[in-house]
Length: 104
Image (cartoon, rainbow, N blue to C red):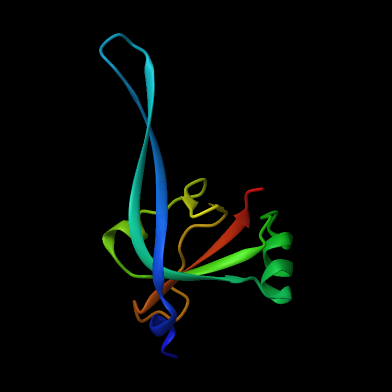
C-alpha cells in the first residue's frame, strides 16, 4: 500500500509543563510539521476503540520519525486530539496509525 502518496503537511502540537525558578508551572506548546494523512475511522475501528473506552472519530497515518514516535495521548494533530499512542500496525516501520477525536 503506497499510502505516502496521500501524505500532506500536518501540524503536531505537543504541550509540556515545566516549573520555573520561582516554582510556577509554565505550559509551553511546540508546533511541528509532520507528514501524514487523516481519514474518518471505520465502524470496526470505532467499535474496537469504544470497547476500550477510547472515544474516536478519525485516524491518522503518519510517517515513522523520532517526532511521530514521541506522540502521546492529549497531543493535537491539526484540530484533532490524539486518543491513542502511535501504533506500528504493519510491523515494518512503514507508517504509524493514530486514533483521533475531533475537537469542536
